[in-house]
Length: 239
Image (cartoon, rainbow, N blue to C red; front, side, top):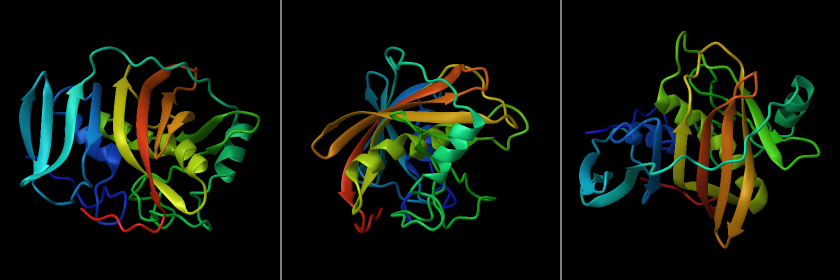
């Protein structure tokens, strides 16, 4: 059984896509897996994993499919990201539409919600870098030692959504469709990292983005490939 703690919400009363995917990945390989969502994730609910062949595990809530998780069959092919200087990334964060004072479709989101107390949430407000197609945000994990994989998944999710939100424009939002993460090295707590992302393509209501967790020396410690589904910003999402 797997249960997502109510602290880790995305849309109100639904599990955060990145944290939930990271928990689901523990069933196959938390360092290299892909999760496809079929429905919003209920909070504080015992979800049932079932082996489905080929290494895939399906997660359900009663008769309702929630997600399927599979180990990655090969490394993610993502062009490396380079760290931005302090001035550039601070300016990018200042341009984020997720920040306090902006309308936000999911203001209580664990990762990017602007009405959330950052002592119980991540407060990651990724914005566009000047003269670049990339979005970026700084992240200093609170952990004293190595950051657990599920939290890396959680941190990568919303910053990787930022290019998708920018592409769909005002009046629309984006929900996680698929999330594939490859954690390539240990990620130390207490060290300032950067999360970078870019838009890959748009196909109707589906948008693809990719991103990376970048160390101060430029090492891409973890990479992510994601698909997002466009929805109306005022759509009420319920699990």
